[in-house]
Amino acid sequence: MEGDTFSGLGNGTQIDSKVVQTFQKSFVQAQDILDQNRLLINEINQNHESKIPDNLSRNVGLIRELNNNIRRVVDLYSDLSSSFTKSMDASSEGDSSGAMKSDGKAGHKRNRPA
Image (cartoon, rainbow, N blue to C red; front, side, top):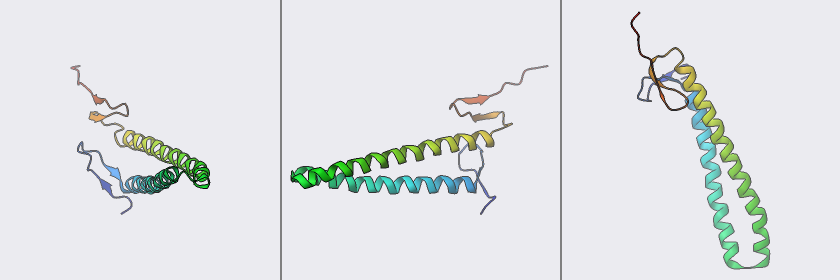
């Protein structure tokens, strides 16, 4: 599969399968963390509703863990965004047929008469 290319972006751009695998791995990591956050939030809510002092003090650590997880997800998405931009820039180098630039604007080139 390595070296294979995908052209599922609709604009004819091909992406290396290794890039796709990297994106998929990052998305799975982010989803795992988000799933863990859902469990943490449920436990935090239960502890809060119980109003038991030990449970409320436990929430301090749970909220810290939640905040760290959120930072990790933000970092993953930031890395994904950078990787995606780099892969799109690399795949559209030399392409003047109207591919999207990293700023999201179409890169149309007009041919001017000589």
